[in-house]
Amino acid sequence: MAHIINLKTHSDKRGNLTVIEKEIPFKINRIFYIYGVDDSVRGGHRHKTTIQAAICIHGSCIVSSNNSNKIVEDFVLDHPNKCLILQPEDYHTMHHFSSDAVLLVLASTCFDPTDYIYEDYK
Image (cartoon, rainbow, N blue to C red):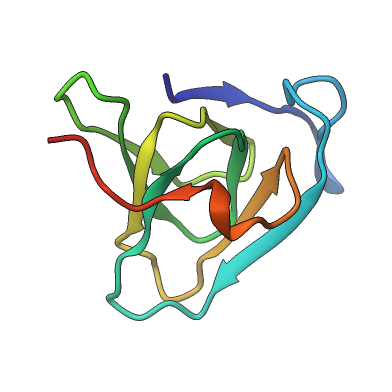
C-alpha cells in the first residue's frame, strides 16, 4: 500500500539539507525525474516487481494510487522531505503538476517494459 515517509531534514540559517540514507526500503537501481509537465496525466500503470519512491523536489504534484481495494488515495507531494513509497501493486497516476515541479523517482529495478501493467483495477 502506498504511504508517505518523511525524509530527515536538517535546517538552519544557511538553508536545508535533506538526507536519504536508510529510509528507502529497497536497493536503488534506477533514478529518473519528471519535469516540464503540462496538464497531462503521467503514469497510469502498476508493476509486477518494481517498488518506487517519489519525491517532488521542487514545486508540487498529486499522485493518485489504488492497490485493488477500490479506493483511490491522493497524495500531495509539495515538500522535498515528503517521499511516497509505491509498492508494485499500486496502480498510480501523477497529475496536477505545478509549472515548476520536478518529481524525482527512485526505483528498485532497471527499466523493463515487461514489468509494467497498464490495466487499472476494475
